[in-house]
Each structure stands twice: as C-alpha cells, then as structure tokens.
Image (cartoon, rainbow, N blue to C red):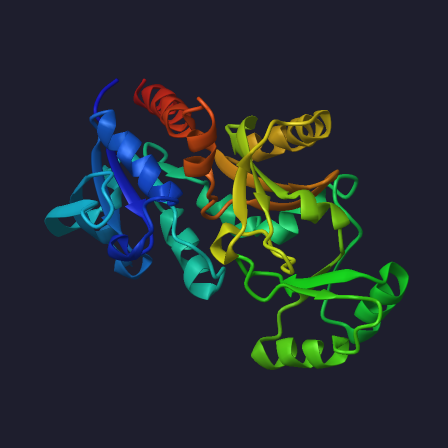
Length: 318
C-alpha cells in the first residue's frame, strides 16, 4: 500500500486523554502503517476560490502520556491534496459543525472523507435511530409540553436528554413521582429551542450500556459500560466503568439490520449504543470506545479500520 496523506479534523491534541481517545488511536495506527499524519481544528478550516484549505500541522505521535505529540511543521494547505480526511471533532452538533460538513463536501472524490460529511449532517445520532422504529425503545422527539406530558403519563419512568448533546451531558431521569418535569422543560427551553429526546427508562442500563463499533457496515467489537451507583448515565466521561462483553444474538440482529444502511450512506466508522434489547443511539460524528475494546480483547479495531480505508484508496487510484 502506498503511503497516504491523512489529515484529522479533531479537538486540540494537547488536551486529549490519549488513554481513551479513539482519534489518537486511529492516528497512531496510521503512523504505524507509515502514512503521513497531519492534524487541524475545525476553526482552521476555510474556503476560497482555490478550494477548501486548513492550517495543517504535521505531527509525530507517541503513545506516552504527557509526551504524546510533536508538531513538526505548520502551513495552510488545500485539502484536495490529501488522500484521507477523518472528521473527528466532538459535538456539539451546532451550526459550526454543520458548516464543516458543507465545506468538506467540496473535496474531490479522490479524497476520502470519513465519515461522509453529507450523511453526518443528515444523520445526527439521536435522530438516525428513528429509521429503525422496531429496534428502539418507546421514544418521543418533541418540544411540545402536552406531548411530553402525555408520553410521561403513559410510560411513567422516563429519560429526557438534549437532541444534540453528547457525553451524557444534560441527561435526566424523571421517575413517576417526580414533580420537576415542567421546571426541567422550562430550563431546556431557556437554553435553546431545539426539540428534546424522551425515552422510556430501561432498567437494563444497570447491567450496562453496550457500545458496539461498526466498521463498513459490520460489527467489529464491543465494550459494556456500567454506570456508577446512583447514576443513570453510563458514559465513560461521567464515570461509566468499561468491562468486556460479547455480542448477543439480539446485538448481532441489530447490527445486521442497520449495517447495510450505514454502509450505503458512507458512514464507515460508527458506534452504536444498545441497552438490553434496544438500540438507543447511532453515533456517527466522533464515536469512541476502541481503546477499551482493544484493551479487553485481541481485536485491533484501528488496524481493521485502516485496512478498509487503504482498500478504498487503492480503488480510487485505479
């Protein structure tokens, strides 16, 4: 395989936690495979009549906490000269994020953008699941108090979360005797006018919230995240404990049902969340979890990802 020029649109490299950062792990693997690795932040992205460009930093990486990167060069470069762009910055999924997807759409087909920016824009994680209503728990997406109250009266114990949030931020459990629903809705509406996602509470979350990585439409590995005591959220950002797990028949069924759609949309690297029998999210922006999966198994998710990217690159050169 020829050496590829890889640019990663990511959060500031100096502040990431490399022990659990999937973007860093993918970058390390690209470097191990002798590809040229560059990084930039979304704020460095721009467009002019010459094309889409970014203030690119050439880096050398080391899997060593506190000494994990060295910037070798910085310059403005047209992104059309790169073979691969990994769009890996964390949400919020706001207008700045959407603008990035529009700009990256201008790149030629010879530049792989992963994931497909058009489909990332059209598939926010909490909305994409609505394409698979038979796989998800009872769910409502709404800003209407009457509809939300009706849903709560029907399902009693519910979860409310921002539609475009991430990392477990803003997730609340409202129990049947909880009197804070209206105050909570007022608080959300004072922050923004976006709809909320409301789902029935799944007691199975006490046994974990499974993160499954899907690469090119097929399940590649999984990790279970156990929420802390007295905590409804299992995200590792808020103390969820990663433990090894295997895919159940239900997990495999879910992956087989959604895999072809993900592949057709050009969503090559995806992380889905499964609680008990239900699909709860499809993460396409900057899915995490491969560090934990690789730590508990002999599955090299980063290697598998790059094998597919390299195969696609070879086809583009023909």
